[in-house]
Image (cartoon, rainbow, N blue to C red):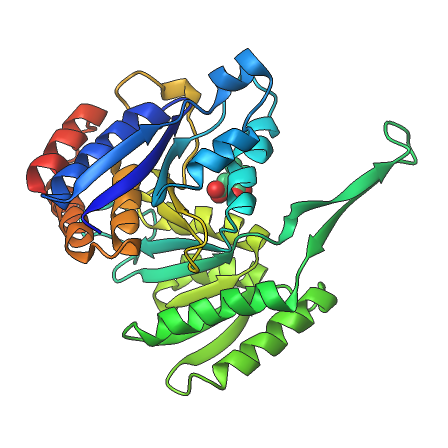
Length: 342
Ligand code: IPM
Ligand code: MN
């Protein structure tokens, strides 16, 4: 591929500020590879104007791209959940982004709240299209004292297996070759059984990869006390959502956390986005840290096979963080520094 046909959804709040920097970083790192960009005006403005968050025709056009770069979604004028479900999750489900990959590495120079944060380097493989996120549930006797609300967590052997296989395969390429399943099998017994069984089955095919198991609550303690023990974590959609915010916090904050919503089959484009949200309180103030979006662009380059470009971006971020002083920097200052280093 000598050109990339990229869809950009800058979105809401700080989305456009951080995305434009990420695009500039990608462009520079790619050198002679052409970046053919189509911008999609999806987000709160479009929703407020048309009443629709994402149309079939948007999906059809987006499906034609090599990859999607997304900034952030969410706006105080739109009730919480509407754009999350109607746009972000709809994209993840429509394009079967079953692997939500969230690397968690402490870059030298990044400031962790932990006393001993040296050497944190793990990846969370969060299952992306199942669990309670499927919207399987309902409520009865709404608004009464007898109200009952159910949110069913859907776990299929097929869905669990592809996440677990991805995790073991990834671990087999890493130095420590270790997978930790994180779940709550002592309480969520039905789903837990699938996860435990599938991990054993897949592990048998990877004799070089070791594995262990932690309950989600215990995993949060380990993540604070000894995060260095983790290499690859595999977990379901909701546990993965929660634990990756914690992972971001210990690695220097949500401003540095990148993520990839992957469809490894290539049937649909994968989507890359910072873990953070639209942060409307600081939008347009030149305060947002574009690093997470830039690192998401590196994940994008890597997934399309542009390994050198990905490395150039990551090295630039690493140098920028290592050189940064104590003073708080603006979006423009961070952008300029990283772009110069690419
Ligand atoms: C994330 C976000 C989303 C999620 C929300 C906005 C639906 O928190 O990407 O982690 O829960 O997956
Ligand atoms: Mn989240």
